[in-house]
Image (cartoon, rainbow, N blue to C red; front, side):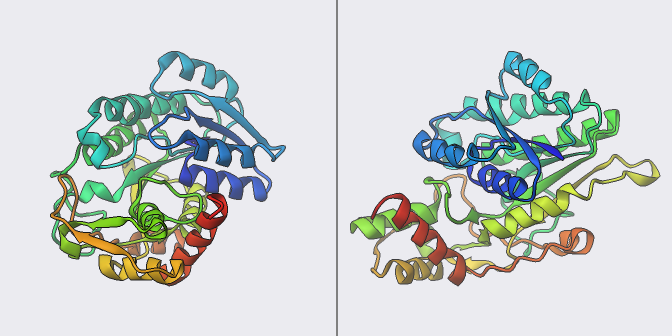
Length: 326
């Protein structure tokens, strides 16, 4: 099977591509290798993918119409598209909102246009985010909950992606599934994420800033569990029975929110050093707690996360030490 993966040099895209190649699929990887975080990490992931004979790479910006035309020519025979390319990060959206409009709105629309004209496309799987739940207080977050009150531009663009995807599924019959990821972590992860920054700071004896004075929880989801969920979803496109659009949305989380201070303690244990902590107020655009109701994806796809934080964080720290030669 030929799979097109956008954001292939990103965190989830890299791990998914590795897993697809390992099972014998061919992967066409797309990424613009931008500098939102250190491009050296993206190049290192990409170098590992290029070792596989079944991997081909296209340096392309999904927000560029002309580059997408070129990509369409190279995507002949693709059966599944996994669209993971996006401008990530809640806080950065306060600084550079145009990047989110270009990648998450224009870029997402361009991917849908690409899929619309693909002959033989079986399924589009795309990344949404738990951020769409915004200021919801009902726990756990369910796909049936209203998501009309985003607290960040990033969240608003991800909700818009779901709406636009539903429209394309309804109008053009594109089978599409959106996945609301909940705080994905693990080896080869993103340096802008808390677990990465905390590990770096603790090893360096630097102060870590703990927001909302530590009164926060996150549904941390290990990368291997996420990849397993994505691959299972790929094999199960929505059918759109009874006149409904062939479109659906699932949560992918660990179904176990962890207190922030426990999270920091697990990192301290893995690193073997105590953190220097400075408490701080809540940051704009952030939320106090995330908690995924995964009953729908368990019922339909069979997804069940297996990796607790106490297993996943030491694996990340082990990778971190090797990658940074610490």
